Length: 337
Image (cartoon, rainbow, N blue to C red; front, top):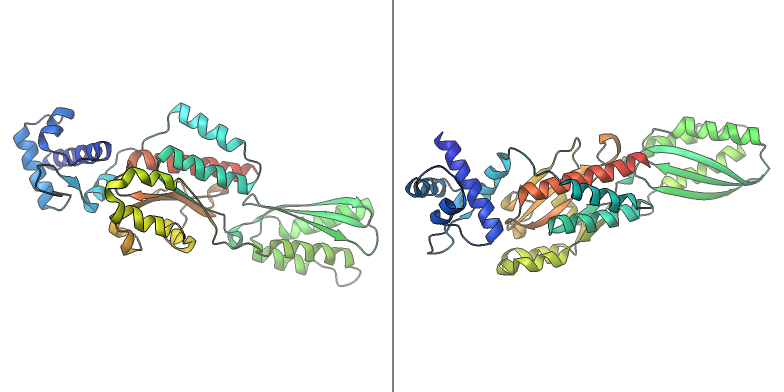
């Protein structure tokens, strides 16, 4: 009972500090929250929480602020992640449904996430090496010229023109289309490329060889997997009181994509949202920031990560809900192609 009461006091301190940006005193807690106990009991609970390292007194005022340990307990003991309202869900759907390709959906996602959370949003581009071949289409532009279309599970679409030494009949084209799809569809990139090369007939396979080479070339990674989109840096202006400790190091980190990828961490599947608070992160100079992230991809296959980064004083339930919701919509976009 005492533990649950102290957890309620800690929860109230976190919520008030995030909302007011001011250290929280016992009187304010009693006035704002129905804790069901006397002010003296609240003061005793605050003293116990401080002794255990969950809250601290930043200066000589009576107010307390959460520590990293306090935020961690608050997040770990969340009974629910704040759900999106119907209006927010409709806004997410309508905003992302207008995307025309992968670049567009990444760009829209990072803008949307930064607007929903009022934090810095980061979206990693899907890693090509983890993607699978969804479909290969061959379109005859002329009897001796083909358009080869490669569609990957990441939503990436590659097109190549192939000039043939001899014209193909419709039946030959259908057979070739069936052959390359049988070899590659559903395979990850590396295995698909190997399977396609094995599919080339040893004799009279000129057309197949030309198409296979075009597909293998399209699968090669011309663009680095270390790509991220960043949005909402202007939101850091809200944290002017912690510029030197939290904002300046974060602004510098936004210039380094490798740093941002390490901040996001490994992509997770199944809708799991990970929260790294303060000193739990990989960089000591960013010890005043937190990261809320999750993986996204089709059919619960985490191809990449998206999330937000910002000072530890953030609305964790709302931010976790927004990150999870946007990831689900992006995953659905990739799943539906």
